[in-house]
Structure formats: C-alpha cells, structure tokens
Image (cartoon, rainbow, N blue to C red; front, side, top):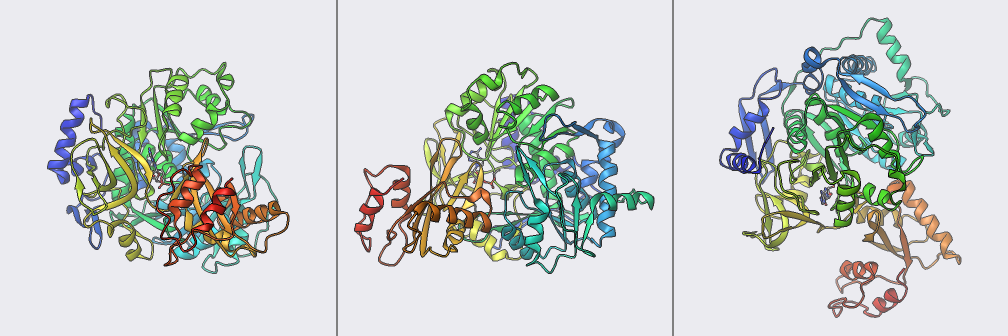
Length: 633
Ligand code: PRX
C-alpha cells in the first residue's frame, strides 16, 4: 500500500479501525485468487478461532510467480550472492524461477509428496532453498524449515512433532570459513524419525555423504529425471485460504519449541502487504534482507513478501564478517542494493570493526534501511543512520514476531517521522494495546505495560501444530480477548511505541529467540549437573548473552573442562546458537519455600547489579545469594 504522507497514514489507519473487514478486503483484492472469499473474517480469541478469507481459493506461488510472468518475467526475482566472493553470483528471473519451482515440485511428486504432507527443509542459503519452499507451496505440501544452526536432536524433535515424510537438505553448507555437514546432521536426526521416507540432497559443498538406498536421492538426478520425462510444467494445487502453508518452530517459556502455523491466504496477504507498505517498494528497487530463511524474517522478506510484490530479492549465503567485516558493504556496492534490511546484532558487530571496512565501498545506491529482531539501541541506530544511510535513508525499526507473519509496529519509510529506538506506530490494520498486570487496558500516552493486540490481522498464527490448547494457553489465556505478545512496551508522550524486551522467560540472543527452560533442560542432561537456571544478561554484540547458574557437585577438578562439556551438551541437544556464554558453578539456587527459583535475583546478579536485590526474605536459604554474588562472572 503506497502512503504519501503521515496525515494519509492517520486517515488510512482510522479507516482500518472503523472498517477492518473492508480495509483487509481492499488489501486482499490486490492479490490473485482463483475464487474470492465468502467471508472476510470469522474470529474469537477465546478458542481461539481466526479464519480469514474463508471460502477463497488460491495458490501462493501463482501470486509469487505466475502472475508476474507476462509483465516482468525477465526481471530478476532472486539475486544470489555466494559465501565465497570469488564464486559467481546467480540471477534467477521470474521466468527462470517459475520453471525451477515447477520442476522441483514435480521432483517432490515423483518422490511421493502429496498435498497436506509435512516436509522438513534443512538447507544452506542457496536459491534452491527458496525453490524448495515454493515447490512445497506449489503442490500444497506444508514446509517446516529448520535453521542450519540447530542440532540433530532439535531437527528430530521437529520432524517427529509434525510427522514429516520427506526431508530436503544439502550435502553441506558454507558459512564464512566453515563447512557445515548438513546431510550428516540429518542422518543423525533420522535415526529417530521413522516417518521420513525420502531425503532429497542438493550438492553444494561436495562433502562426502552417506546415501541410503531407497531413501536418499540427489536433487540434481531427480531434476534430470523430470527433464528427460518432459515433466517440467506443474499446475499449482488449488488451496483453501485457511489451508496450512507452513509450520515454523519457535521457542517459548516452556522446554519444548512450538510449531507456529501459518495459512495460505492470510499469510500471503500479510507478508505482501507489509513488505510493500513498510518499505514503500518501487519496481526497480533491489531489496536485501540479510536474515536466514530458517527464520520467519527470511520466509516473509526474502521469499513470500518480495516475490508476491514482483520485487527483486537479494539472498546472501555468507556472514557479515567473512572474508572481512566489509562483506555486507561489498554486496551492497556490487549489486547496487537500494533497501537493506538487517538486524541490530549485525550492526553492532560491524560497528565494532570501526570505519576501516567501509572504506572504498560505494553505498550510494541505498535509499531505505530496516532493522528487525530485537530492540535497536540508539548507538547502533545512529551508526546505521550515519555510516550506512549517510543521514538520508529512513530506518524502519520493524517490531513483529514469528507468530505475526509480518511487521506489526514499524515506521513506514519516508512517511513516519522517526525516533531512534522506537518501532513507532502500528501499521494500518493493527490494533496494539498496553495492559497492566491485572489485564486492564492502559489508555493515554506516556505509559508502559505488556503489549497485546486486540483484533486479528491476516498473518496471525492459527494454531500451534498438533496442540491447539497450547496456542490458547500461550497467547490467548493471559489476557481475555487479546493476543499477548510476551513483550513489554512503552508508549511515549507522542504515542510512539518502544518495545522494551520480553517479559517472559525467553531470551533474545543475536535476534534469535531462545527459551531459558530449553537451555536448562539441555544443561541438565549433562552427567554431572543436578540443576541449573538460565537467565539473560546485556551483551555488547548479541544484545543478550546466556548466563547459566549450574549446580554440579561432581564436576571435574578442572572446572573449565566441565564448562566446555556442558557447552558441548547444549550444542548437541539444541544447537550452537544456544550455547551459554557464561557458566557459574553454584552450590544451590535461590528458591522460595515452595521451590520456585527466584530468577529476578539471578538476573540482577548476571547483569552485575547486586546493589539492590529486593526482598530475599522469602528465600529458603538466603545464604546462597551471598555465595552466588561472590562468584559472579
Ligand atoms: O521481543 C521481540 C523481539 O523479537 C521477538 C520475536 O522473535 P521472533 O519470533 O524470533 O521474530 C524475530 C523476527 C521478527 C519479539 O517478541 N523483536 C523483534 N523485532 C523487534 C523486537 N524487539 C524490539 N524491536 C524490534 N524491532
């Protein structure tokens, strides 16, 4: 939606409050439907039940590919920049991407995939990853992408939870100087996954892999088969708007990640609408989202959002600091990127290298910037603004979540007057509210509270896979008739929203969501650990670091060895992304008489703020606090 002024934003916003269904029907009209909906919205937040565009028929890939072929078929859909700057980049036009998606959709069918099947994708950031997602969507299979930084155990848990029958992977993946042996990890995972009948393996790193007869097939061989069969066209499956499009697992305050479910119609409308609106995308612009497709940001802003709008999406395989800390700027310079959408953690990391890596890099193509994943501190905001945007690129600090499908509260670039550190205002159609502990709505400005949303939007999660009650409990039970985000938030005197961080036991480490309970479960699996408590602490680059207090009476006399073993255990159970940054051995944890760990105290100690630990009189053994304070790292 193109919006030309802040006044116009207010008008549109008001209309979206007054006539929400009319508003969303207008947005949905800009997409291609095989059949339009019978009812725009049917909802209640008590079950919860949310159905958007009921009765409508579509296929999201017709919106992302087919509908663009006549007008912009030769426009680059995906520009891919490899990890190694000496390797050639690749460009896939809309026509080429369409062909590749259809071919791979037929590969999936040849390997037994059917509408409604769950397919796990564990791949490096290569165009075939986007092709795999779209091919699943083409035939109505439900993809469940698992980020490459998760372990075999985490993959197995996710495959089992969704009973996936097919896995799409690669021999390995390049990330900076490392080769990640993806297929080996999958092999380890599949020992526990009898539901998986086929594994399709793309060649990327030429790492030797074991290929099991009858189960494992090479991507390239399968493509050749469909080509020799002349079976390269693939009619898109007709989907109901409320059919599942994908599952994406995310962490919460319990030990087990949950499969957030998004549906074909609502998610498509929301990803496309938010991409177009927030960034005010213009037809010639090159959009570079630096996220991994393993996260929701990559789903919505590398694949579905940009492609549904006929944009050019730049996909980067590598990391910002390899071969050196100028890599992002090389990519921007080389491909003349116009819109750069990245994460505060990446900005802070690059900032720490000073200005040297920026020398000789032409960033003048940039006109718009975006940030996502965690609160952006003012120092990082100003550096991004001045050094990267040269003071003339608006920054969209986009607040949203896996469960939201797309941006919720964000400046609209060129429209919303900016305030550093503020996600600013809700997009038209989004109704945020702040509530106090009792669940009362807090009105007016200059107030803080827990952030809830009181009316559905098309991208809201529909359920958590296989466990609807968990969805209700997690998001809709804390406050009646509201979706609870888990975030704390300030609304300042001017009505600007500023997200202050999670109010539950969820950490945000380098923009990745990690449940403390999950990390504790993993630590507790180590042979010498009796008990543990994990909290976050402020980390210069990562935003939050993982601080573990561990009770391990039989640890090795060389404590560091046990520390390393515990880190290895977490790596095995969850994945390298959840590794604790600090492990403090303690003789006991501060608990109330009812046995509840007082995390508030641990959080303060981890933050290095022990001046006022508050009331400790309810503790079973107040003495333990002194010991923990004394040993803080
Ligand atoms: O705490 C908020 C933080 O990230 C959480 C959502 O994490 P995830 O589902 O992994 O999605 C990340 C990418 C959308 C939120 O509950 N968060 C995300 N964006 C921002 C943010 N916090 C502050 N400002 C943001 N712009």
